[in-house]
Length: 89
Image (tube, rainbow, N blue to C red; front, side):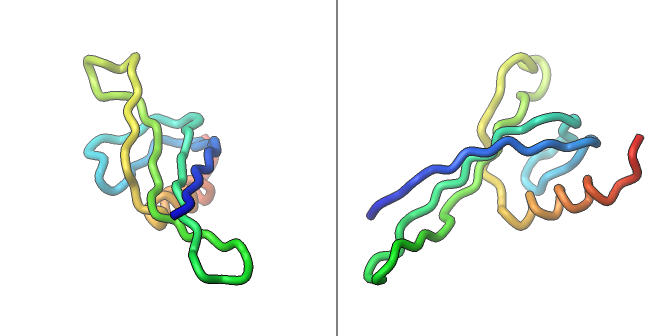
């Protein structure tokens, strides 16, 4: 099975929460990695998402390190929508 990874940087203007992460995350830029696999048997190339991960700062006392956490793509979209609709500080 053919797989590919897509990386993008997303920005949050406010601190935010993601399901599965037990602490608030600070505003800033975050790298998101999406793994996709090719759907076999089609006459054209098509991929489906199989995993979404976000790079976040580690909790204290290791705040200078980062960790990659698996998240739901819907949860990420919800957090982005909430951030975009929040009043500017």
